[in-house]
Length: 377
Image (tube, rainbow, N blue to C red; front, side, top):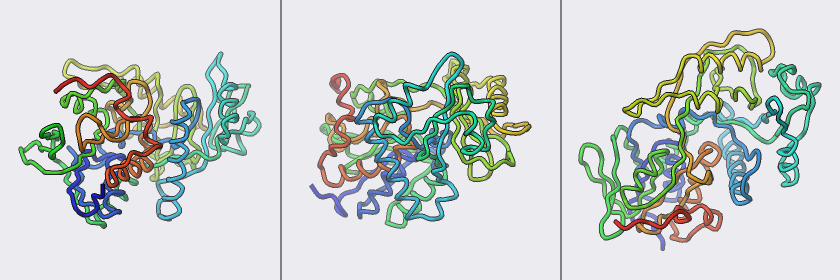
């Protein structure tokens, strides 16, 4: 089935997955409209640590997908020299907490051919001079030279510009968007103001809202999305290149000289109100700042510029959801953790599925239909 230039396509979601899909569709000549409730990158993509990696242990299929994802970022970097400002591959460093060890993780990574080097405290100043060696445990740390980071708002802006250049339309501020169906197939979307946009194919990429939207169509998708937040610091005056993953705080730089901080322990402190609103305790914000100070070399005081909170998209089994929804003809879904790492590759592969009608072998393990049977509409 060939859709190029013949049918209208709609991408719902203004994060990296939606922007990437729209750009890949438009690049191949499709008539595509991207619709987003608010502004581009105002959801999970705007509050992501955005560490580019396939670190640690995961399924072989997921690891392979992430390796492809890293490859696509390097291609993007080569084709877009200006991306050096917001996309870097300067490596990452991680170490274990008290009473723990990363030796098994290191063995797993090396056995799979992943680029991992075990380093001691004496190597820290050479590899990551921005890190205080005393913060690293006596057993040492894992250095992954091929990992990096991306500032997603800048990437999304570039993807959106490319989509528009190839004829796409971007509709921001549309409010809540609902998928419209007719006789078991998508017919378009309805915007908050009642406007209906017709389409033969709809790609749903709205982050943590995807499971709810699918549920309205009778599609069961287990959801493990937790509340999360990141702290954006004021400018630090320190040349930080390495992504740092310590037990108490994860750190990556921004293009304008700030830091993005997060940690699992801090996320667990979020209070969820009766109305679903999220409240981040000030002591957790300060805890992240102090933890980062202890990790970084030199004597410095970090201050918070912004705190960004919201749900972190994670499917129930932790693996990505990507591709056609079998029970609703013309509907495709993207819902995953590590959207930053997977953004370019998932947009490319889903766009190809949409345009050709042929299922990608790479995405076959990640269909929504791997979960419980679809309930009747």
